[in-house]
Image (cartoon, rainbow, N blue to C red):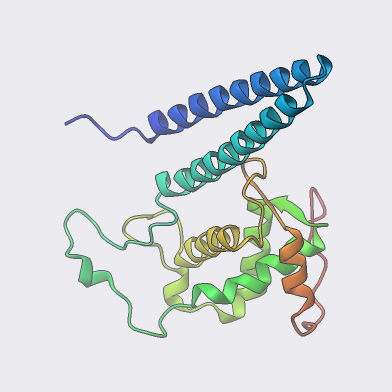
Length: 205
């Protein structure tokens, strides 16, 4: 059996996205020619097709980002190891902080960062704000991700859930987390939290 190579799937996504981008450009050019020739009805039909292709490409972009998380085994949350039975690593209820607890801190931090920020900075700030509430189990690494503590995996999973809910953008540049209008509306509907210190950026620490 060949060794696993997640990079091949990422490359395949890149090829598909490039082809879709070329197809969208070709359809848009066709629509422009139809419009220039006075064939308004044809131009309208082509623009509808271009919109559909653009929407499909956005879905592929989202799937690629989801794959990037899965390929790092960040979103799996499966605590297993080659020599261990899966149930040996399971935690009892209450031993770790629920993923939902990371929702508001992530959104508040992004709000303070004018709506977007590097994942590294957001996660550092999440840890700072939640440090007093994290359990010993939250701070432990898992067998499947020995370099990542459970709290970080939980925050990453919450981020993916918020993308699905439309609170965070699915098309942000890699390594950047970004609020949507829906995310801002969700925050506006929450009680005002206690004052937090400003998020330190680029050399302010």
